[in-house]
Image (cartoon, rainbow, N blue to C red):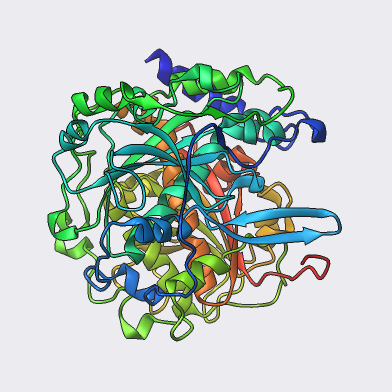
Length: 543
């Protein structure tokens, strides 16, 4: 319970307010800007074959179960998996400055998230199973460790494992105390990028939420602290199991303890490269990290009746979904690879391009269905500032992603809200108009007066059920609420690209001003992430 109080205190301390921002340096210390790529000096690199042609399925098909034939696990498919998820997608240059863009978005393009995998012995790699770190700069796997075949056999399933970690310093260098939040957004973005990549290969993904952070650290060598510089350590985040054969896919299950210990006792290689010469200390981030460490849990169901358990008069129909031809505004024939490699974070928007109502609904249907990617109930709901959607009244809307929270949201928000269903809204989309009116200036002001929140077709405030989730599950669930917002953000990025628009995540907003706007009091609901979708302006100075 002390951890819960501590993480709540961190959340309050890292809020932005009209009269003060969360603590940061207030300037960019360019002399200590972190190196954007993690490398393990002394570790063998396994080059991944470069994909010369686009062999991916249509974007809309990857969301249809069974539509994409599964590819066998081999060096080529592992290469595609990382190319579709964590790889460099483009380079930009302005004058003498040159920087990489990646498939997975990141706050400030700082990329605190690192990817790892545990693979069996494979042709073209090694005769023993091993631990690998993905290097996007080289598009290669760095061999961090090896262990006996008997250890791998103890898994007892046709899967391989993928993990994510965070380097808090990468974000704290720019954003100070709020950086811990941004690392969790980015972890959610990266998880959904991995999920999408697996879908493109016909593979099944399970987020294994019973494992402890300590076990994840042991599996990927993150607890080998003498191999990392102080203040540049990697913090374990999540572990996923991927089955290349969905017909034999396991349900989420505890990783055997003998497997974790067997991997940790293997042979390890390499030492992490230095990222900065010196570091500014941010002790509050360390406090939040310690408070939110996850223990091993039982994996019991994380509450909630789903839509199927509601009374018939409140149950949405299931006749329409994004796969319904009447709701497909995609560019014809656009492949999944084209969508993910086109994804960019818009810097500014044109203030005029609108979105069709049908495309808007289809985007929201995709978000509404995304709870299928979670081992817990959906806890994040969307407050939508609709600016330029054809045939839809401008104003403030709310998308409810879980039926069990509908009444609580109604009671927690302003009593004068309308809660009206918009015209021709699909029956299975729990979208409500709360208040009519031009919200352009409101959206701009509450997002730290950033024009990008008002210049697109719509913007979003992601509202999480907060205090009761922490009280029920523990302080470790704090990070998972942010992961959920990042997952939603990644889907919004891709859905925007699929209709010829762009998106941008917004981490800077005035937290309590959002709550006041909605009528939210206390900490039961908190705004954790903002987003905007519109037509990006092209900067001619960039190559």
